[in-house]
Image (cartoon, rainbow, N blue to C red):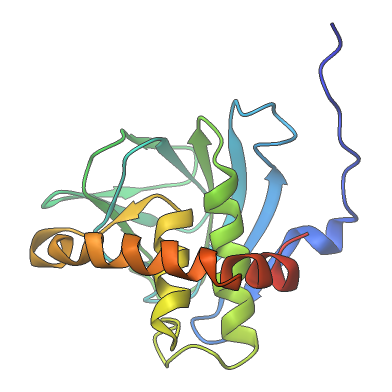
Amino acid sequence: MNALTFPEPPFSQRIYENPIIKDKAIFLKTSRETNGEYTLIEVEVAPGGGNELHIHRTFSETFRPLAGDLEVQVGKKRTLLKQGESYTVQPLTHHAFHNPSDKPVKFLVELRPGHEGFEQSIKIAYGLACDGLTNNKSVPKKFSHLALVLTLSDTYLPGFLSLLMPVFKWKARQARKRGIEKELLNTYCD
């Protein structure tokens, strides 16, 4: 039996930029294109940029700097990756990444297995930022949008914030019932 193939969108439709935090994501291979094996994204993070500690339950992430140094935090341990080095964060592991320099850093992040929801969450989050629907830290202003982005991306918050996850899941279910997820997917995803 032949594997399903999907036409690749034009390269310009694979580039997503966040004007608030000055990040860029280029989808090199999507979960759909690899039959769920992996997702491969080239990411550019502005000086001082990055994210907060979080976990993913269903996929690992491998970080590989292409230009500049990338700091990867796992638990309390921080590792500075140079070009050519890589670090894999296993599922259920608290982690974050950070650009410690005064220049943008470019890196590859590979998710295994691939995760279409994660891909969609980036497109939605960056789209909301472009449309002025996030705060100055690029957090969606609407709670329902935040809940959907977190649940789509399989992102769980650590510590006392983890107590909010049932609320986020409930709010995401409500947003799906009200058609908000479908609206976001139609507006911001391919």
